[in-house]
Image (cartoon, rainbow, N blue to C red):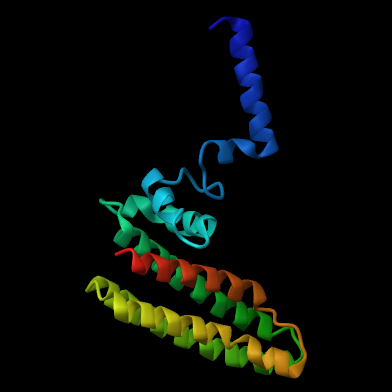
Length: 182
């Protein structure tokens, strides 16, 4: 490769880096490192593959074997962590919103706490490869956080947890699909 060609390649790489395309061109997930190709392949079979890759993909190095069960465990772990983040957001938001929303948030916090318990039950079922129980627990988790929106709708006020609920729903659907794959 001549000097002119090397400069051209270097210039192209710098241009891609500055436009934010280099991480995507290299298969990076949210800037957090390359997504294991096996994780990416399994995630591609879920309803929300980008969510799967960006959450489960972060944990691939913790697993000596990457298979459907490992990706399910990664996704359920990420689902659990995101639910905990939702509860923290509830606590933070409750201090700065009107009373009608604060009351509805208290209900959401209870639902997220139930979701955490249900995810724990799903994780135990997955350990024993009891996919039937795991799927039921994941479906119950969806019902728990989906019901968070109800008091906001009834009070006619915006739900500050809408973004979390959407992400949790996507993660739960990925988990249920992955559970069907083991």
